Structure formats: C-alpha cells, structure tokens
Length: 184
Ligand code: HEM
Image 1 (cartoon, protein in one colour):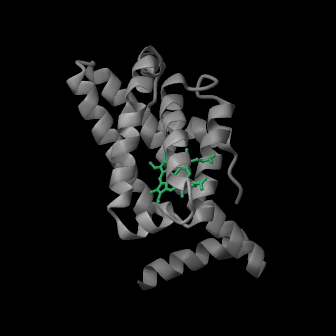
Image 2: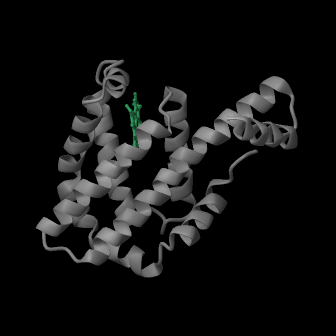
C-alpha cells in the first residue's frame, strides 16, 4: 500500500478533468495569484484560528503561524505556475504536504473545510477583479487535486502503519475494513 505521487497525480488530473486549457488559464493568472496570496493567507489562518482544535495546533510552537503564512503563499502560487507543468515535482511536493499534515495529526475533517475556504475566497476575489469564470473553474479543479493528495496521505499512512505493526496482509486489512463498515 504505497502511493506513487506522479501516478496518483495523473489519475486525479484525469478524474477531475484538469485540462490543458485549465493549465493555460492558471499560468496566465500566475502574477495575479502572487498579488492576492497574502490576502488568501489571511482568510485561511483566520478561519483555522477560529476553531479551538486547529488554533491549538497552529500556536503549538513559536513562529509557526508566521512560517505557515509564507509556505501558504508559495503553495498558492504553485497551483498557478504548476512548477514543472504539474508533473512529478508538483506531485512529489503535494505528497510531502500531505505527509506533513498526517504527521501533525491533521485529519480530513480539518483539511476539507480549509480547502473550501480557499476555493470560496479566491473565487470571490476573482469575481471582484473581473476575472473570467474559467479561472475560477480551473482553480477549483487544481484545489481538488491538491486536496486529494492530503486526504490520500492520511489513509495511506494509517494503513501502512497498521500493516507494519500487525504483519497483516493488505487483503486481510481490506476485508476487516469492509466487515467493520458493514457492522456499523
Ligand atoms: C487546504 C488545506 C491546507 C493546505 C493547502 C496547507 C498547506 C500547508 C503547507 C504548504 C505547509 C508546509 C509544508 C512544508 O513545510 O513543506 C503546511 C504545513 C502545516 N500546516 Fe497546513 N495546509 C492545509 C491545512 C491545514 C490545516 C487544516 C491545519 C490545521 C491547523 C494546518 C496546519 C499546518 C501546520 C501546523 C503545518 C506545519 C508548520 C510547521 O512547519 O511547523 N494546515 N500546510
């Protein structure tokens, strides 16, 4: 049960229908993404700070929020540049971001609404700035690709940890999950 980031990326690109046109639209707006990155970070961390659990994680160590505001801006900009054309560098980076969140103990229940804030606020700002609907569509799609990485990291790491600890086979593990779900 081990995820290969580039392969996962192409699966998600295909499932989400992130097209060549979407890539062009995002790259054309790369400068705009830099202009609005700080404002998006404000919305993002204000949102996380309003939740007691997330606020505690954010303020766990000194300078964390400050550091995060910078990494958020880079992350946001990378969605528009695509780094290496949304290729293996992009996929590896997204996978790493997923793993970091699993390590800190941030689960899907935190990440999904946080990504919704990004999609919502960036969409609103795009509208205010008179951007075409195609930009909002393309941004929503790449946000969903990124979200899929963070979510998948959570299940991949959990499953790998259980398999390593117990010595179970992957087949047995999957059967147990099915049985468990049926019993709930
Ligand atoms: C849309 C969802 C999210 C995105 C795109 C995102 C993005 C990022 C990025 C790019 C990093 C830096 C990774 C690195 O160092 O390479 C990071 C780290 C981190 N994120 Fe998130 N994040 C998200 C959700 C959350 C949520 C919900 C929390 C909850 C509090 C959170 C808290 C953190 C923390 C504590 C770190 C590590 C900071 C450190 O270096 O000490 N993130 N995140």
